[in-house]
Length: 123
Image 1 (tube, one colour):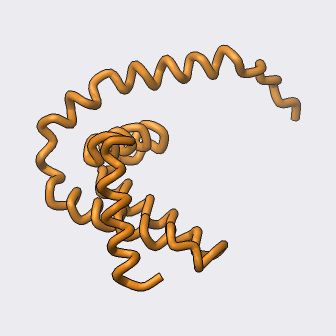
Image 2 (image 1 turned 90 degrees about the vertical axis):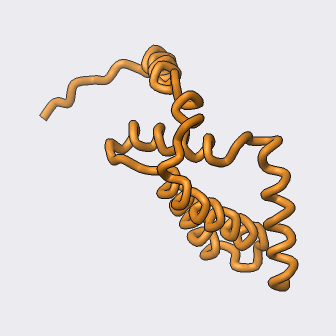
């Protein structure tokens, strides 16, 4: 795939993503919030875009000819570039994140109810 094709495809994918997944900034902020809860490490939306780019880079080891890795990688770097510039502009994002802790707690309760009881370790 040539450079121009990669860039054209990256733009096409980018333009089609919002109707499917919503505003990129809100999505990345939600992922950052969830990842922060899971890891206990404060992660930003910019961090998440870079991690997702790293996922695309890691997949090159399995198949270097898959154009999706390059196309998606371009978009994740573009997201990171936008997010680093707008990292202080969180006006509508906090409203989008409201209730996420409660949603996460409800999901955890569902999993806890279906988990088998743990056996004490005999040593």
